[in-house]
Image (cartoon, rainbow, N blue to C red; front, side):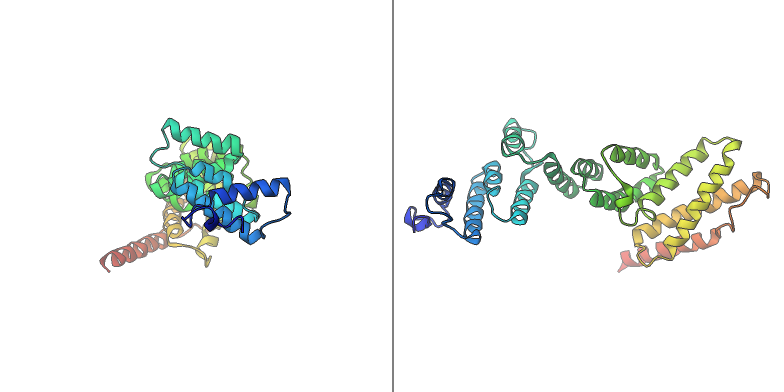
Amino acid sequence: WVLDVSGHSMFALDSGLSWHLNSILKGLNIFGNTLTPIEESKLCMAYVFELEVAGYWHWAVYVAHFIPGTLDREECIRELLCRHVGDANADTAEFQEKLDFVRITVGVSEEIIAEAHAYKAKYSGDTKLQIAYLVVAKKWESWHKVVVDALVPKLISDGEEMLLIDILKEARDAGLNTSNLDSWDLRGGFYELFALTKCKIQNANYEDIPDILNNLEQIRNRLLRIKSSENETEIHAKCSVEIGTWLSMRLLELKQVTPPAAFRCGAIIDLPMWEDRRKTLLTHEVLDFLA
């Protein structure tokens, strides 16, 4: 068999000549399809592995483009990029040359490269960088999950909610459509409403009170929906406790300066209820730590 590695090399993993010969025969259509799709995939993967081990990961990406199955091809390319894009040598001229080869010569899209960068940022613990690359990659569900699970709790804890508004603006400018996101209303949309309302209160005039009360009522209704949701995680439970306590205090303050006829915010959320939830969560954290 002309494509058998044993016919030209004593090393079982030396599949380069077989891959090139198969590519030539296939391109010239001399013997028709000399390999089945499965056999061709195995040959491509063997050569991809050989090139990557030798340090030529950019050429491995090139060879991966010839894997017959679309899903297998895309998965292989993504795995290669995730292993090598953004590594310790990312700032060197040699690395940039390889990346330009992948981007320009091979034609890998910026979205796929950005997805690999986001993967690296995740495991280096750089949440903001991960979010920025997910925006470029247009992986909006992953972006939403990272924002609400990893970033929002820290922003709320540090009182830096306005950063969320900036991040959302950048995402929308890049094509984010929140109507396509799962649980947006009770996750990202809820936190956005909270951040906008908090900012509005800090810069409010007396005539802004009706709009502020309307926003607070929306926050109140969503909090009650979140509290009754079976999908409320511990992370979001902590955030809802913080926001619930803040909301109760703001409503109590506004009730003192708002005429009864204008105060149509329904029943004020009970502040002790949120304080009790805060204490319960804190107790669970202490018990988990001691365990």
